[in-house]
Image 1: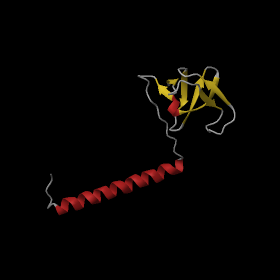
Image 2: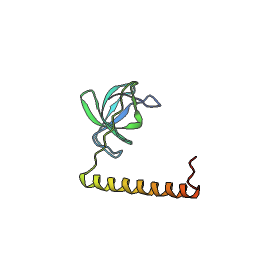
Image 3: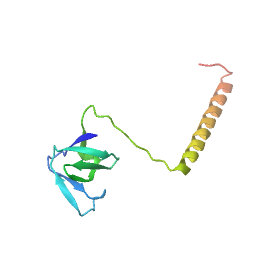
Image 4: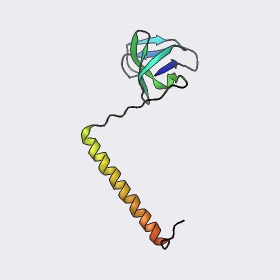
Length: 110
């Protein structure tokens, strides 16, 4: 996904070696520099700026218009079954609430 580095004050933004503000190894990327977003996160995104690859705070990235946003969710196998059980339980609870609502209205709908 393509993006452009954007800072409100027009100053360069730090491209860090790891996703942490305390990271000591970083490079300045000028405002307006086109970059490639390799992994987009809420706080940090892994990007490529020229020959360098690193992490930049997502808030400094402006996605180019008409670029599709691709989100990836990785769920461990053991969590998949737990999530399915949770969703089934929620559906069961919603059905029970709907049945009570229907009974209290005398079976009328609407």
